[in-house]
Image (cartoon, rainbow, N blue to C red; front, side, top):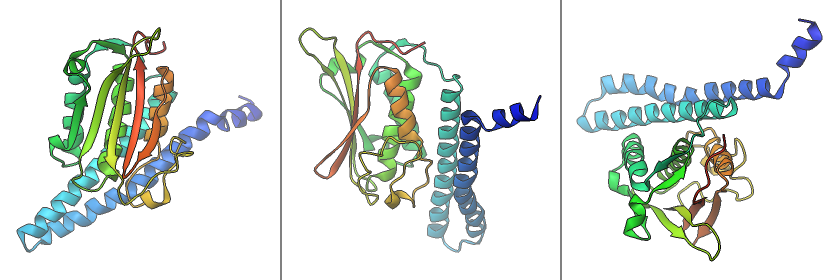
Length: 249
């Protein structure tokens, strides 16, 4: 291969994006690994059960942070490489959400009832809907996961689901995640969905700044868009799915 062609290939936007993703992964994973290294020593030297319990909790959180970082980078890589399935299927909201919420609460060491799922009408829980469950799971996992991470500890989180009807328009299913504003404050609404954006006050939390960006890309691919607003002391993220609209090929 000619030298000019090799240089052009290695300077392509795709290669640059992949390198940036790898650099981000290495940088972000060092902190939880340091916590694990220090915690392992502290746990072995702990003099009381309370000290042991505290370090066990920190170790579990460090492992969860690593898993979250790896998942985010993997999802972005698969999405940009065209390997993330956009296949549409029929699903019911309740059957999709129950395992997702349980998994999130387990990882965050939170009680399962911290996330309350509320339906405008009881029948909406089992309402058959069509869409990309892979895309939808990632979006809801990121929105609910952020709420667990950034809301004040033990504060309740609500996921409201309901149908919207307008005359002459297809029915829509709306998902809205509500949580109290935590110590990281309110993200910049003009930047919150930008790639790698993280509010300066959120720097003490582990993260890549990719979750909301990827969620927005997936929502757009499904013909939707995620919105953010502040309602008093709460942050709300919401989006809608249109009946009969399938994910793109």
